[in-house]
Image (cartoon, rainbow, N blue to C red; front, side):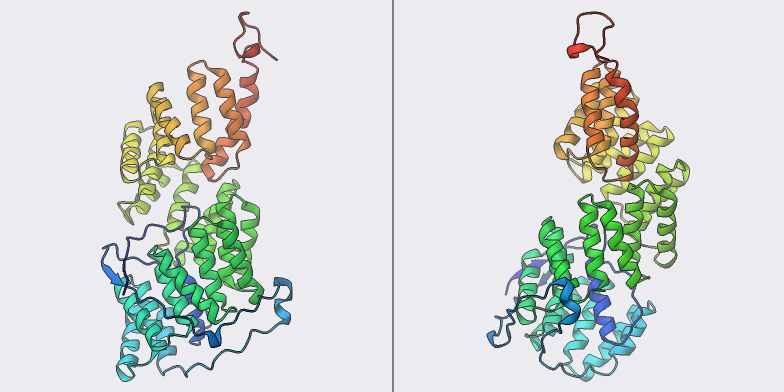
Length: 464
């Protein structure tokens, strides 16, 4: 039996998108138990690195493999899914447990399922549901044991394989998750949840085209599947296709108005578009129902900072950082707020800590470079900014700050080159959006100050 180890879960997406992997699985299984209202988001990870064992999936029984091609998305509504083997009747108590979970009474829901399993140790559905609830409760090792038992009891059940894959994805055991999802889809190629989870797997591996193909396959089978729309939105957001991402998040919320993760990601997209008031409204609405939503906490801090509410932004950054004191993003965010407040030394301290936690962290290197610029330490500023560009050359803000250093040194040709790059790149954060607007304002003015040929010997002569 192969051994896998749980990992301390950082946000599995970039800060622009942090939807927990298990949320789609919880939504599907609770709906299947008869609870129609949407569920809140879920997080996972015990942070202890405890060893947990994963039972490899059994070989697929070839008699039930469905190799048919999925129907085109536009024809999905006209074609029915293939018949599947009749499932066993759900044990009494699953509906009650699901209702308790929806009310936030997770421990009580688990106790109900404990009773179901005590009465019937072969109740595979109860193991599967208890695993998901334990996962939501950050009992990762116990959840995987339950998933393994469900799969042992019904090795040909694609739903249980997909459920286990959700945990394996969240703990970044990608090979094991891929094995479960491949088997699940060989058993039932029309399993919507398995397609969504495999799309999530590809997104985490930055295989964005393959991820979109999986989400499209899910939507071909169920055009109103909220997790599939949300998954597409996350990928499009990460690719910088902001308008298209916003459409997908709107579709998600149209189907599932209580989907806090989609609302938070929509808020992040609105920030990038410069629509800060709308973004803050989305974050506040999310935090009313889900006070611990990490993406909403982060987005609210960014929105306050970029709208000039610096003191409130510092407080919001402290709250975000209090959720995880080892999260480099939190220190970077507070460093940005400290810079805006004028506390340059405190900002450098936060950026230092962020870089200690995440070597080569481009955003923190950019922030520290800006801090050195404010102290007129141009050599240190350039060293950090050059490192940031080597680590990630897609940041508008980094080029804009480096242009400021070059301009301060009188190197207007280099400054102009960086500003042109800043204008050409697609913004990927609210800070990039603001930096790009500044770059546009500065580039034309600076070009007029560049001597002809980049270094004319005629004093005062310019190209324009």
